[in-house]
Image 1 (cartoon, rainbow, N blue to C red):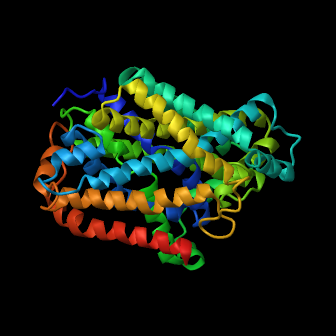
Image 2: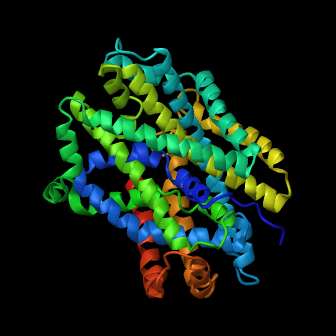
Image 3: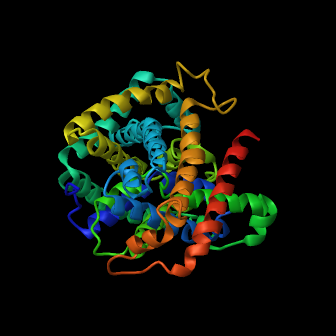
Length: 458
């Protein structure tokens, strides 16, 4: 087999993989869903499921990539038994990558727009609550403006991938991750020092299980925590497998996966320390749902002393979080075309830049020209439909397929998986987890998927 591209360092592998996992699931979805389900008690549930679900699935996806030494389709082809069709799961994963980029690039464009708005003073202290709300609706009503910023997000992404794996994807993502962590710490400290921030900190740090059980419903809260733990790591679409294929066998995958998940969780927890004290200080509802990022928080910054600068810093951090995911997923798509179709990196990147830009237009137009198309019922948009397909169907079912592939003899098999996962120095996966991974974990993932689909259409 031709020598595969490799990352230049172990740190690059950890930060790249963490960058793929760290995204809007951490800095946007985690705070608002935590606010919705009661704060600290929900966080403890989330961390529990992150350990029992996220760690084993991540190890498996890395192992498939490292052993197969290709993108998810090629890797499963290399590892599957002769005559089996496990690699068809990989095609669904690649489709999931395209779907994710089709709407994630639009949201990243919104983040870029808000960053420049705060930086230039377009959003400032003269805006009241109604004006801030109108600011977002004005953006989504303008297809030309949205298209321009979506194109900018994709241009930054494709340009990074064209530069190369080590000099582009690895180096730029490492810089973004370091800056992201610094900005998040600064923002968290600033929020915690705001007047009346203590109430938000107590809500976030002091568990109240009685409140969780009686006000929100324990079963609903459990499903929400399970779903968030699963969603936040971007597992199931082969994006982790591609970085596994670039990683050497000097380190075992168990320890590296735990480090990546800890970094991912750190960013999620920091986002809570940014948002809950700030919302408490200015009387904004942190559990306000998807509008939190583009309406509720801009309201906080327009009321805050020096809010123009703090708003720009916050949205810069959000841009780095979103771009790190875009770059990782775009690299995965390009790797597919390089590995299996023989395209050069440059040709693959340019072709997919044009293709994804065109495919993103329905999500842009779904807020204006195509607003009559409501795939999930009244009030939904095309973007919501694309997000539903990725989050509720492709991510969980892809992960379920990887778990079954790695644990059952009709797939790759437990013995081969465990040998690959434990190759090298570091934490080993205990063989005693075989029954849990082969039977209990698939059941949990299936339940999450069924509940997620039912919850939308019930």
